[in-house]
Length: 350
Image 1 (cartoon, rainbow, N blue to C red):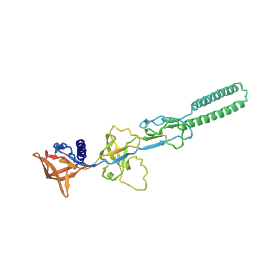
Image 2: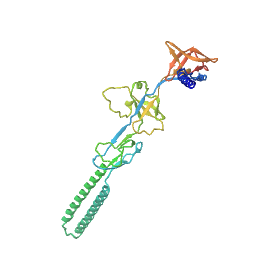
Image 3: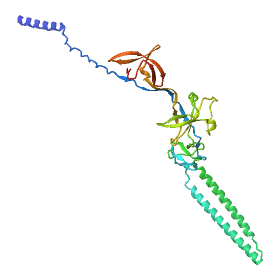
């Protein structure tokens, strides 16, 4: 019994002591490091070309005439707006109209009434003339006072009919917006289908495009030479234009603000092809300041500058070397290389 008790006690002690002993941590696998592949060397072979310094100022379309059109009566439902931006219109074309379904029937009835009274007057005059002729033949005088009074009455009715027709025609004119001249629609109100007229509220704007004039208004205008041709970029298309003297051309200029005068230049598109101008149109003008032709050049951002030193990185025999360069014309995106590089050299790209 003592032996069993001793064994049990020894076992318990061993278990207790085993919990106090340090536990060996597991051995982790060695870390794996990814080796980067060699960077591909990008180079640019030098060639000859043109280096340009230029500007692209913005010129605004300046129509000869532009007019915002509106209804002259208020509180009438708008029947419809019949044009869209970019539509070409002729003088007198109906551009928009108010609702008045009976107005043309009224005009028709008024014209018929006037024609009927006119017919009565014509017949009265014929009867009067016949009576006068008979009296001349027979020598018996007649009393034509009733002819005269009836003529006055019919003439008064014709006058009233003409006044009614004039009123109806004026009302028709007021319920319609017509083009005052040939032009292009440059703006149209957002017509929702249920709208009411308001005096002075623009409905349609049209511009006279008899001439295609653009105005440049900034310091670049001082570089423009009258009579010289320039390229105007409108959208994705390029159009030739000539610089014109505004004092010898029929140009309607918008009023200046604040009395501040700034340099300005005017261009007129030439050639048969013309853009369809709608709305406020801007054109960029290509103005060449300076050009170096058929020279060795580099994109400017590949040239490094430290102090007064300009240099590039060249690839020679698979070795990158530094080469000092002398610069010429610095263009908008490229720079002329006067000395230090030759055609065919490989410049390491930054």
